Every structure is written in C-alpha cells, then in structure tokens.
Amino acid sequence: MSPMKYSDALSKLYSRIIMPKTAPGIEKVQRGLERLALPLSKAASRTLVVAGTNGKGSVCRTLEHFMAKAGLKTHLFTSPHLVHVQERIRIGEKCISEEDFTTAFSHVDQLTQDLDLSHFETLVLVAAWLFYQDPPGPEDWFIWEVGLGGTWDATNAIPHEHSVVTALGFDHQDLLGNTITDIAKNKFGIFSANQNVYCLSDYPSDVQSLLSQKIEKLYLNVHLAPPWSYQASPDFPLPIEILHCQWGTIKLPQPGRHFAENLNLSLCILDHLGIDLTFGMRALEQLYWPGRMDMLQPLATSGTLILSGDHNPLGAQMLGKTLSSVTYDRVALLVGMGKGKDRKAVLQELANIPRSQLTLTHSPFQGCEAGEFSHWLKDGCEYVRDPWQALTTLLDKCGPRDLVVVTGSLYLVGKIYSHALRANWLPLKKRGFFI
Image 1: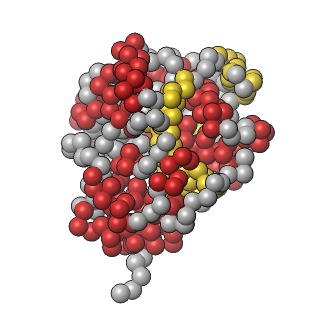
Image 2: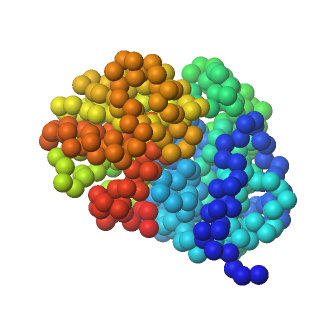
Image 3: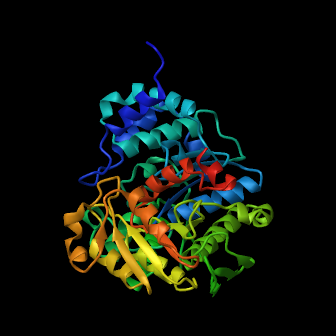
C-alpha cells in the first residue's frame, strides 16, 4: 500500500461529521486511545485540560508561552484552526508539519476505522499519538483545550490531574443547556477526584454553589485566581492596557480586559505549578494568539483592520468594551455568523458600539445566508456574500483613524487570514504562527 498523501488525509478528515447533533460521550475516544497504546497515565501529572465559554484558547496559549520560555517542552491542542489544520497541534510552540500530520492521521485511521469517529475526535487521537508516542519525560507538558462543553468532550478522555475553567457564558445551548448553571455543570465535568482545579473567583452564586459541591464530593484542590485590576489608556488603533496583579504591573501583549483576566488566571496556574515566570515575562511581547483583537495594517489602504472571532454574546460584549477605549472616528463591522449562534444577541451587542456600521457576510462553516439576517437587512444593514469583496470595499472607504473589524465567527476570521497571508499583510512574527 502506498503512503497516504496530505490531501488524502484532509479529504478523509473533512468527510467526517464536525458538529454533533447530541452529546456524543467519550467512549469511542477512550477505545481509540486504548488501541494506540500510549503511556498517557505517566504524563497525567503534567497534563492540563482547559474548559470555558470564552478565553480557554488564550489561557492555553499563555500557558504554552510561559512553559516554553522556562525551558519546558510544550504540547498544545486547540480548536478551531484558522488557516490550516496543523495549527491545532503544536509542539514546542510550533505547528506540526504536513508530513507529521499525515503520518499520524494514517496511523490513527488504520486502527480506528470501525469507530465512526467525528472530525474532532479524530484530531484528538492524532494529537495524542503525536504527543505521547515517545515516553514523556519530566520536561514535557501537555495542554488540551476542550472543544465543546467538558463532560463528554473528547479531550476529557485524556488522563489529567489539572483542570482549568475560564469565563462562562451562553453558547451551544442546544447541547449544554439554557442556564449558566447547566453550562457550568457540563464544563465542570472535566473534574475528577483529587484533582488540582483552577477557576475564576467571580462566577454567579449558583455556579459557585455548584463548584463548592464538586469540591466536597471529589476532594478537589481548588485554586481561585487572585484579585486583579485593569487600566486602559485610550489610544488609536488600540488602547494601552495594563494588568495590575499579584505578579506585578504588566503591559498587555494582546488587547482587552478579558485578556487581562485570562493572563491573571494563567499566572495563577503557572505559579501553583512551580513554573518560572521570569523568561516568559521578559518575552511577553512574543505572546501572539491570532484571531483575538489582532490588528493588521493592510497594504495600500489607510484603514486599520482588526480580526476578532467573537461568536457569542459575551465575546461581542467584550469586543465593545475594548473598542470603547479606542479613539477611532468610525468603525465598520464586517460580521458573519454560524446558523446555530445567537444572532440576535450578538448583533445587538455589536450594533450598540458607537459610530459603527454593520455589514453582514457569509461565514465559511455553516454560515448564515442573507435571509437569516432579514431583520437586520430591513434596518439598513448591507449583506455582501463574498467576505473578501466586502472587506476590500470597506477598507477602500476608510479614513486614517477609521477601523474595520471582522467578527462573529472564527471561521470567517480564518478565511480573511488566508487572503491576508497571500496579500502579505502580516508581519514576519505573525506569519510565523501559521508556518
């Protein structure tokens, strides 16, 4: 049999179901892991699983940054990807190669063809094989971002002694429930007996009560993020932002009060893990996480472009708060959304942003068509199906202190990154993330 090609691996991967209709459980992934015969339990003490509605990717990337700068070997799994699937699987702060992805996919596929794995389940097993095929040593750390929920997410099949929960909000209610407590219950499903758990300290009272019950039942060792404060000095094209926390006064490497919260939680985790923060702090400007208030300066235009995949009401609210400290003249919001998202709540948050104009477009993955934005079109919003056409038109109309913000979907943001890479809009540091 001839070796599998990268294109064949992608074709097989994308033929598999992406979004489940019902909570799938983790049994198939557990069976797949058993067949891979990996030394997972030996690495459980250095494995973290990170759940939450918003911020989990930022926390994962921050942990990766500080661990790598402290001389540790990092293994990071996140989702979704923006440009290519290898972004989801990073070793030593670098995306895996096409060759490594193809080899791992072929190996996993041969052993699990009868399991009817989903797209995400397959990727978790591919990452696991790449991470653990060699016996892990004391310098190896493993960080897994939950895809959806927690209890039955495929990442929860990975043995781990450290669980993290970030900010909670409404998203995927069809699968997780219609109350914050229901959502928290599912995300807290990554906890198991005697674990170390790291959480925010300001959850609603019902969620705090649920957490207390979990602590008592499972004998959890819980670490709550300590008090912090945030300071923003208005500026253009982004505010100057400072985090004041237990670990000092820190200029934020990425915009937003929500990133300050995520950084404070990350430092809490790293401190309790005994990771040296010195080198990560010195190189903090290198902490780059695309698609989250990422500013670009497109060539041959006077406008400033911000890519921010805020796809739920909490994310849209945070985007508005960050923009409130930007001294722009006008902001054009190019918005595409998935069919299952809360369009009304997200678009209302975005419409409340001062001196803004919404242009609606099509998001690549299960994106809404014009008819599904009918209410907003009646109110004067324009729908341009081709995102790149819409973006270039908006940029051409920009003045020197105007913004164009692409938001509503990380899949939409990813499509724009693909074009931006071809157009050479990204500086070398940012291009390097995708290579």
